[in-house]
Image (cartoon, rainbow, N blue to C red):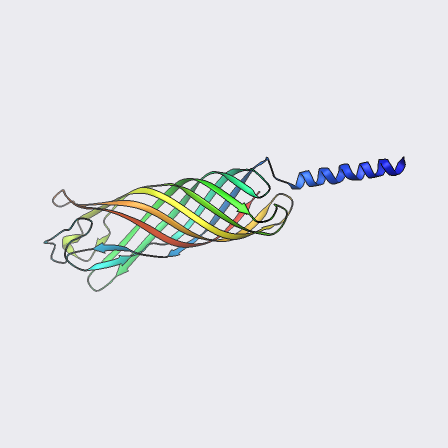
Length: 227
C-alpha cells in the first residue's frame, strides 16, 4: 500500500511538473530587435538640367541606386497553439535611412515604418529544449513622411518627396534557447520587405512630377526574448 501511494505521488508530481513546463494553451510575448542591412536598391532618377521629368523619376539624367537600412524592433503578443506553434498579431518600428554623396549632389532619404502584422512561429522541438525555428510576419507598414531629399542641385532642391506605406513581410530563421521554464532568448536572421509609394512635387511650381511604387529589402540580424 505504501509503495502504491508513493508511486501515485511521484506520478502526480511528474504530471504537474510536465504540465507547468508546457506552454500549450497559454498566452505569450516575443520581442525582437536588431539591424537591417542593405539588400537591394531603388532607382532614383534626376536631371541636372531640370528640363525633363519622367514618370516615376527625375527625367533624362543619371540614375542612382539608393538603398535603405536601419534598426528595428518588433513586439509580438500571441498564443501557444501547441508546444511548437506560436501565433498572433504584433506591431513593429523600422527606421530606414539611405544616402548618396557625390560631386554633383547629396541625396538623403529617411523615414519610419510602423508595420502591423499577423505572425506565426514553428519550433522544431518543444518549448523546454533548445531549438531551431522558422517564422513569418506579414501585414501593412504605415509610412507618413514628406521631405526634400536632394541637396547641391539648385533646380532639384524644391522637389518634395511624400512617402506612404504598403505591404510588409518578414520571413526568418533562427535558434531559440530556454533560460528557464518560462523565458527564452533567440538569435535570428530575417529577410524584411517593405513596399511603399513615393509622390514627387515641385514646390516651386506646385506641379506633380511623378509617382513611384517601390520596395525596400533588408537582411536583418536580430536578438529576441520570449515567454
